[in-house]
Length: 206
Image (tube, rainbow, N blue to C red; front, side):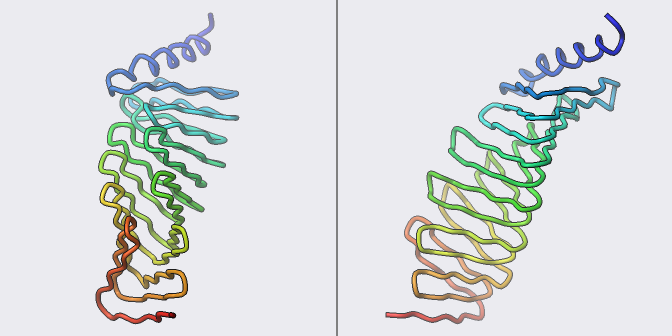
């Protein structure tokens, strides 16, 4: 077996063996795999129908890079799709980085997150999803849709456990035929109640 092939299988072995240290299941597959196990520069690159599963998180992309101590970071690019299977959360984006240790995913580009349990679809140019805290931060051109309600802002924080959405940065909420604007808006996604703070304006149609 030549040195290049040995390095390939050694890298594969290390990735599989290191996963239990992090306490989750870590598997992957792709059309092609290459990388390096040089100390301090460990890198595994998956291309072509690349797929990684880390515990309950399934990621698919055109290209996936795995690197860091104990393969802590997963970088995805090109038609990125993911699902948090235990919570039934789906997302799509241009680029994604997932921290296996902190269980935080950062989505960049045309990013969409769908929480099927709470019937919410949200979009933004940057999304940070904290799986452990169940808190999601949206930035730039944020839009959130739930039933007949549409929320827009430049910054938003979604607290999934409490079912609360905090909007700032020119926020506006359209609820059926009503419109609400303020410096800050809080939406209770369980009751659809809207709380306005700061300079408030709006219109209500009977």
